[in-house]
Length: 343
Image 1 (cartoon, helix red, strand yellow):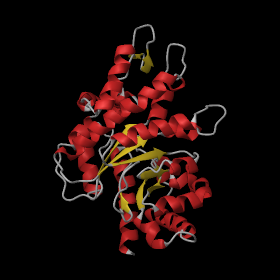
Image 2 (tube, one colour; image 1 turned 180 degrees about the vertical axis):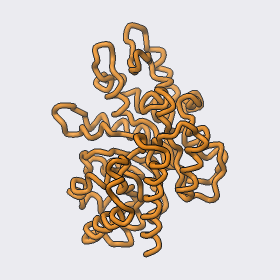
Image 3 (cartoon, helix red, strand yellow; image 1 turned 90 degrees about the horizontal axis):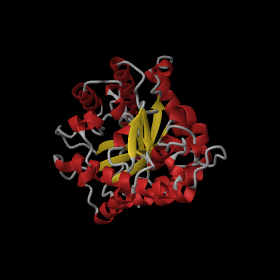
């Protein structure tokens, strides 16, 4: 079961990627804007290896990178590599799953920093569903449909996530951590076109949650089966509140139960796409969020809602300039400040 955080009280943070290519500047921006809840930024514009999935693929059995694609090669004996992941998982031997700088320059810069009593430190890792659906074999079949890969991937990711968690606190003792699983492919839950087996998802989730000592959350920027997501009891549920709140609130009873037992919702109310963000103002987005708050607090106590909420951009901010990304993050921080000032 995922560890629940102390109540964040509507603090603000970011989601994942930034358009920066300089990790020092990226971390400077994040820490100055979100000092209470900073996050380690991903910097995919630096190169292929820092993109989602690629960044967590170092120890993937059978991995090959070919023409900008991540594949697995089945023409070799992978049994030894697979068995090593299982053994390391059983022994909680996460040190070999450290992430190299060329795969996560933002994270490595982030963990060099010292923080002044933050609420928590946050990072992200590719979730097993998204990982398994993005990586294919020579027949272009997602490896998530291979039972052995579907079983080993969560354990591989759990070991990576445990190393990330350890690295976050090595220089910042007694600090809470949040490791978010980046899972856009969970939007396929319930789909007949892209079938995802819920039992496999649940089993993989527990493989990861049981390995970590801090909080582990799920980010899905598309609509999904939120009842199922809440049933996993993640520490944080992060979603695109700007675009998909109506669908999210179809699960209001499940949301209430989730918040009551200590779960946190990260409301992505600020569009991460600058083309959409530029059509809004800080005030219009604040009013949009307060409209959501008014709707939700018809059946959830205001104190509970505010206590168990976080304000974020809707997703990672990649397709923007550095200046634009700062404005998006600053807007999330300003909305948070207004909400917290009114409490």
